Structure formats: structure tokens, C-alpha cells
Length: 415
Image (cartoon, rainbow, N blue to C red; front, side):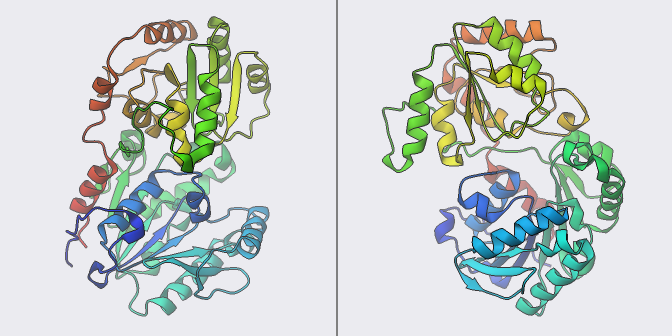
């Protein structure tokens, strides 16, 4: 097979659709609907967009994240019916649908996975793909271990699995650890190429795979760049208003941007808020937490919960931080991660204080690492006084662009 070598860049809206006739099937860990709204942008999203920018494939089918329970299957079906994608209906039925949303991109929704199970979803997706592409895909590229048979469904295709975090350690899947272990084992045995977001995932899950490579997360440095909010882009009024709100808070402004799950150490952040009563602690991101530690944190008068912001608005808000935080608990799950926010903070030129989680190696000049709450508070105090120019911190993420990551991925895939 031929290796993809078209590295042309440009806006995805005008992505080349030549692609030499190649076809890509991608099983995603997010939904195109959310990504269009600027929500849930992750490694999967950035890699997909970079692939599209290159025009490496004539046509791509991306499978929205599959539901894992009956209720989530019903919710997916509800969205499929009442929040239909704009574009040509390419078939499916009551429990699945495929829609052509862009010239080069089709989106498949599979509520059937939650309602009737994974095997039913596999049969349905195989049928839809074969109807669209009688010769099958040239490449299958997966981000979800639950579709571990994807390589076997299309054995003639080059198969790629990009392992983002260790799902067995995620709080949402504690009752499915054994099932996930079986999926990971099947992936290790059947996929041609594996990428891992962290060294931990590589060592724990794919150490014996002959073609597994650690490729960290990356950064869109043009998007996350220092700026003054007086340079208001009127197309992003929401970003401007949230940044204005942060700008008016008592300083120093200490901030966190990300999904607020159990990995965020609420007790540690409470200590930080108490150590800087005259400042402000800003938490930006979706949260469904209702535990005692979280409720005690957000009850503090200097803690401000901004909620979820679109991807386009994230730089506006973080531009007002004096110090950016990565207050993650240290456990097996966080050790399997590679925080995208680290690259985003540094690209904004912000001083960073973090607990000793994975992914910090090589960024010593931009990150202060603290093990205990007292050390964390001290590190924040030092970061507040840090006068290092923003440009020096931005230089730390040079060579870490998403285009660099996909360059490496393409080198390793024999298409």
C-alpha cells in the first residue's frame, strides 16, 4: 500500500477532497454535534481536523461516540431525531443514521449500541459502510476500545488505534473493567498500529505490540496565543464577556480550564482559595459533581464557577489568569493522561502549577510541580511573582503542534 504524503495545510472548510480516492473510517470518542458547537474538543477532534486539512482522504466517515447504556442509547436516539445533522441522509433507519455533513465528511450515529448492544451496532455500522463503500475503507482509525472488533470487520483496511487515557481507570467505567480488558487485549492482537497518549498506557496496555508508539497531545498555538481583550473579535461576544468578567475579579486570578470530574482535587483547591482570600479562583468547564468536597469549594466567596465555554472562547478567559492550575489527583487514571491544558496554558504564556501527574517531563522551565497542599500554595505564590516573559513559555511548546503529531502518525502508518 502507498504511504500518505499529502501534507498540505489550510482551513478544513476548504479541505482538499482528492485524497487519491482513499477512504477513512474513524470511530470517535466525541460527537461531531458537540465539536461543531465548540464543546468537548479533544485529541480525536484535533487529529481528525488535521487529517482533513491535508486532504489525505477523499471521504471520511466518523462514528459519533457510541452510547454504553440503554438510557444513553435513548438519549442518542433523541438527539438523532430532534437535533438532526444538516446534510444529506445516507441511510440507517430508526436506530442508526449516517449523514453527509461536509463534502469530505459523513457522520454516523449509533443509538443501537446502547439499546441493542455492541454486536448489533457492529453489524449495523458494517452494513452502512459497505453500502457506501463497496470496496470498504482503506483505513480504520479508532479512539474507543468498545469497538475493538473494527479491525476484524474490515480486515483489508490498515487499522490504527489511538489510545487516549486508560479507560479501565475512569470513574464512569468501573463496572466494565473486565469487559474493557478484553477489548484492549483484542486491540493489541488485531490492530496494525497503536498510538498511546502517555508512556503509562504504552507500558500497561501495549508493551508487547510490535508497532505501538507513544505520541503525546499537541497544541493549536495560533488559537491559544496571548492577547489583550481590548482586541475584541465581535464574532465571539461570549468569549469577550466571560473574559471581561474574569478581568474584573480581584487579583491574582488563579484559573483552571477543563472537565471538572473526580480527578480534580477539590480539597486542594479549597486550600488554595483559603491561602489567597483577596484573590480569585476561577473554574472553567462542565461539571456534574455534587460531592461534599466540591460543594464546600464552590461555597467559598472567592471561588467563581464559569461553567463550560466553547473552544473558541477558552483563550479569552484564560488570558485573564495570573496563574494556571492543573490540580489533578495523582492516581492510575491521571498517570495515564497527557493533559492538553498544559500545552494550552504554556501557549498562552501562563505560569503553570501542577500536581505531579504524567506528561510534565520536558516542561520544567514553565511548570512548578507540587506534591502537598502546602507546596502547591507556595508554588502558586512563586508563580504570581514570576516575571518570565510570555514568549519564553510559548517557546516551550514549539514542535508540539497538532500538525507535528499527525506528521509522526503518518510516518508510522503504512497506508
